[in-house]
Length: 114
Image (tube, rainbow, N blue to C red):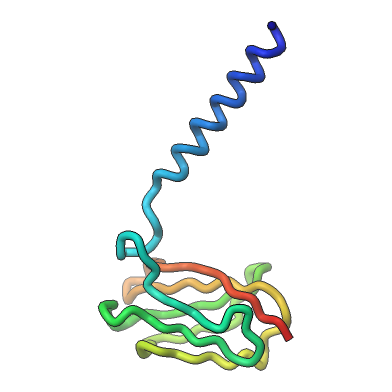
């Protein structure tokens, strides 16, 4: 019984902490949805970012390699932006969409397969 009590306390502590983390709101400004859709995923030669029409101007997309190296940055994007993947090697990439003030409003990942 002495062994079980600390184990149960440990499990309850992490279960409560895990539940608290899932109640945080999404990073997007729109409740319940993504601001950007990207396709194809996995990509080979290009990736297309399709932004929500209701979003304000002045947005910037920054693409990082999975190791954190900045690979691409573009400002003042149109509703549909296509990026050539000539300089991208095979692997996972992370994108951040920022507003005019530099606040991250959406984030995600995509895969390049060649």
